[in-house]
Image 1 (spheres, rainbow, N blue to C red):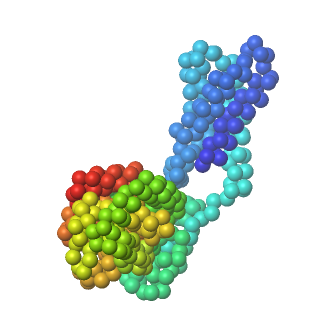
Image 2 (cartoon, rainbow, N blue to C red):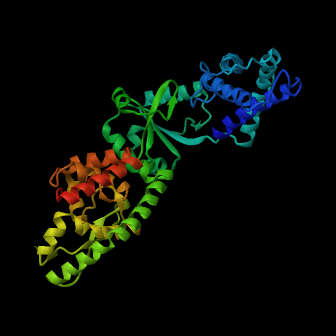
Image 3 (cartoon, helix red, strand yellow):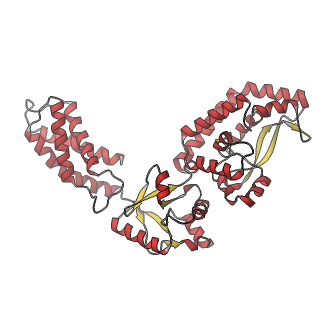
Length: 406
């Protein structure tokens, strides 16, 4: 899209330049304001006409003629506001060059960078699948490649072969918006952080913040763990590396004080490692400052636990990729096994790395039911942003300094 807009701006500028060269300088001056006026008004006119829209249907297909008419009006208004009347030759000749050059530029761009359709599987009941296929054919969307063999019915979701197909395909669209909620959870489990698209029901429309696409005239919403894949995952991991290294350096004097206090109170060891469930359900060893001995909390340990200082050593796990600064609370394997008997979707938390801080940690009580904590974790995972991580870290630090939470 950026290349397309830049090319359009260049056409607006070069068209003006070509006509301006034929006019005496007394009638037309190549000042920056004139060049910007034509380039920016062309982009604005194309945008208003729908040339930069993600969705184009036969009914909403944009017109270059309409865009040029809009640009001419904008140029006339802009010239009047700048107190620079433009020659009629410019006002009428520049659009002629633009209306010839714009289609050629788009054809060249399509030849150089053709649209690569995404391999897509539609999932739903028979009626919804038929409607979705008809909508795609009517719209002629070149970004989605679907044929009659690339559909699966809801009852096939339990088939291992279908699950493998859904896991490996580039994109999955759930076209039955009123399917049971269990279908969505199972599909997220199969697809992993990439998630899937789905046609929005009335309730989904209340919660949707943006539409990543359409099928026919029906809007799609996305169900995905954005911080678990792609650019967002790279950004989150970069923040983890930078943040954990910085926090270790800043808190180094505290590590020394805590280590001395543990040794003086109860001897060695200073650090311990506990087994936890991490990314993808794999176990790892989580570092902590030792706060217990023989199943009894030591005097120093009680203080460390109250202010969460015992968790400071988990920065080592963040640095080496076992954990994140922010994410679901790390749980012991035996606890996860017990919870899964009553809350079978608890394993969805493992789509991301566990965190030192998290939405469930700062928003719920320590003894809150696992299914409630899972809701907090899923909300965090599917609505992640850098700003959300910063807020949760600040709240976790505030809670630690106050000696609250746990």
